[in-house]
Image (cartoon, rainbow, N blue to C red; front, side, top):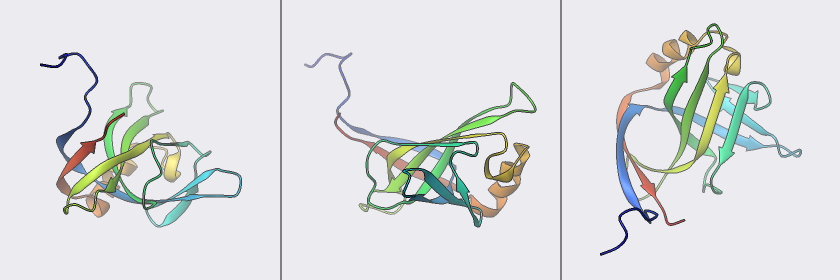
Length: 133
């Protein structure tokens, strides 16, 4: 039997939440732009992108996990960036993270995301697959 406290080599996690479709584009200065809600946004404008790997596509799903409004009116949101595994519909692999801060995507107030949720997000179930480190 293996060490119960060792690194987990893989597995599947089932989550439920709303997804926002985004598209990423890397410019000649290695800066990301994000296509969200019909507009391209530069990452230096209150958005941070961190990729874990080179995803097969830059059309990803953004899954909000945590919103911090404790410093109101300033807020920030942490999201997983997910790419399809290609194995089955609704199954995704973590591609990275997105952090957005007050003013991101032209929204000064967090409720802007709440309004968008009804337009872009459905309550979906998804699988996130981990891979060996």
